[in-house]
Image (cartoon, rainbow, N blue to C red; front, side, top):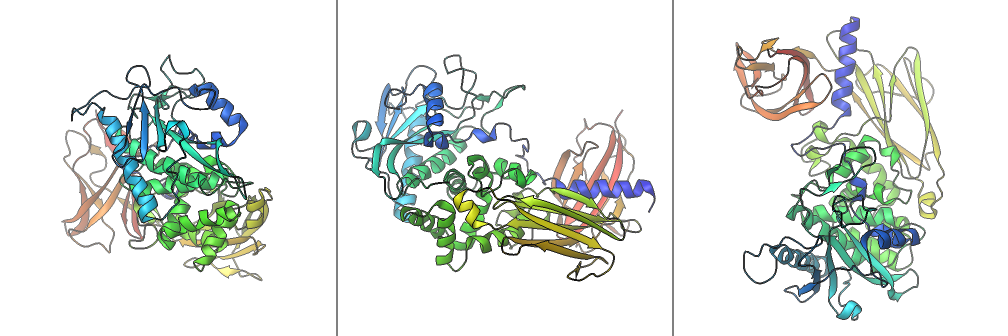
Amino acid sequence: MNDYLKLFGIIITLFLFSLPLVKGDDNSDCDGCSGKCGTHLTLTNDGKEYLQRTYFLDSNEIPTVGQKSTISPLNIFKIHYDTIGVHAPPPADKNQNGIPDYVDSVCYYFDYVYQKYTNEFGFRSPYPDRGARGSDHYDIYLYDLGNSDDDTVSKYNAGGLYGLTTSATYDAISADPFLVTYSFIMIDNDFAATDSIRNKGSKPSPAFKFPGIPSLKVTIAHEFFHAIQFMYGQSQPASSTVMEMNAVAMERVFFPEVLDYLQYVRRLFRNPSSLPFGIDDPYSGYGHSIFNQYLIENFGIEIMRLIWEKVALGHEVYSAIDLALKDLGSSLPAAWCEFLDWAYYTGERTVEGTYFSNAAELPLIEPFSIIYYESPSKSTSGYMAPYEFRMVRFYFQANGNLTDNNLDILLGNLDLKSASSQFNITKSYYIRTSDEETPGSTKIPDLNYWVYYEYDSTFFCHHSHSNPGYEIAHAYPNPFRVGTDEVMLFPAPLKTEIYQKILLVIYDSEMQQIYSKSLPVTVNNHNKIVRWDDMPKDISSGIYIFGIHNGDEVVLGKFAIINN
């Protein structure tokens, strides 16, 4: 393999195996995504002080909005809202019932999630609330949480908050074994597309990925689950990671069509080590909703109720998950280890009918480290936090017109005791690949190399996946001249059949995806091909990279475009 081809193969493989295959809604930057839910702020004195300063709560920690109120059709919720001012919801009232349509939607979706949570799923109900704030109804406040740019909103507000659920000590039901309280909820007053997040040192960015009713729906499912969690108890010493993980996962249970949760999964999969699950951190919980999805798909919605019933008995949240899983024939360490494979087979690696039901829309995990093999051996080592997972990748030079082979290894730290006690005790691992078999090593499937693992099996598990190199193929015409050539042809993988649809992905020279679509296989000069006939007319001149995917079979290549 010449130096240019070797470099090209490495770039292609790194690119296609490290970045997510993006659906049309992708925004992998996830600007401001950590600001989704403010519930965790209500659990600390510093957080409460921030909320008091930022959102103008009165002396009883209640929002200063509510020029009007209305009761939901099921007589469960009382919605407090302003009719004028920055916090007022949109005034449109198409059904002319005297209530803004947005408020009608708030009533409808809160009633809907209440019925499913309490009647269908069997969770404890936070209603009635013993007359707190004037009635037995559960109180909802509409407030301009999401926007950073209104002059009338506190200068401390950076924007981007969807909602928050406040558990106040004066609403306490019990303090044994954990604090159990009633609560109230604040949600954004309009989820407007114009609401923005003010980031330090950068331009404001949109507050909501799916503005309007979609964000309203998932926020209601999310925040009301926090209200339910408060009815079981505020676990100590940890709670926020699991509380947020649960709440984001319930968004998908109720409204799977709203893909808001994907921004947090992308953030996690770009660098899982930056957000270890075993360290109490609400932002880690957002991304680890994907682990919660694994739990629900494997064990049913019952697992969620079982977890919080264990908390009510006095078990902190990590032990509660473990005990709930043991009731269902598993455990947290066993589930975490199995989850590693589920997390690997996403995006273009999706195995239809296996692992996540929505695997194709999920991103790919990016490697924590990349090691280029050199004979006779190459090794890597590191330390991992409790319930951290990461992927390390070894590259092995291939021969001929192929990209380099690689070995992906997913590692998981299973230290339940450290997570439960919130002791951030790291554990070490060592991995070595070699040309020849050594004591304790195993042969890498499909490759003529061996791998050796050294770690404490009490605390670690791993899954490995070997990936032989892919053929580098050619597109036609190359270069493609916009305005002269009409269609570009790409070679289809050998195992495809005529009229079968396969995925074509195009990347520019900056390794940014510009196109992703399933196209039918056709024939040209007795060769199976796919036709790209909807190329943008304003596409720039330059070098582009393509990948054609048919399950495990992949064809990779490059081509040039001239657009004068």
